[in-house]
Length: 168
Image (cartoon, rainbow, N blue to C red):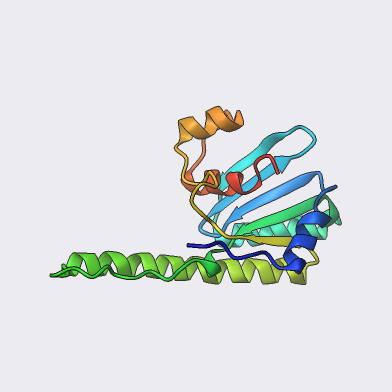
């Protein structure tokens, strides 16, 4: 799969985040992480539901500190569709697995779109990030802790959110 080239608008958003001291990574499936650029460390890696993410974005926007935060939101919109591989005989369980994955991806796409739109409405700088292999997502807890220095517990969703902003 070839990666989509970022638009000029997306590049300008990332460039506008150069002086921003805090980056927030959001995995729409339930991950929230905050990276302090000055300390070069993660200060939060949480598992939260969609509405808690909205509340946190709202809190940051309402505090008037939106200019100190940049939001990187995992956005699976540009990934390829899920297809069932052709086999001689397709098992019913294979079909169910693929349909479940497709539903989950669709759910995350909808959440990501809503979070991006909400961030724009609140005047937050939001950058959609397409999850791709090799970006550090799907790390186990031990590898994640060794890489980032994070000492707390973390879920897969929290680690995924953290890897969106780690060392940016």
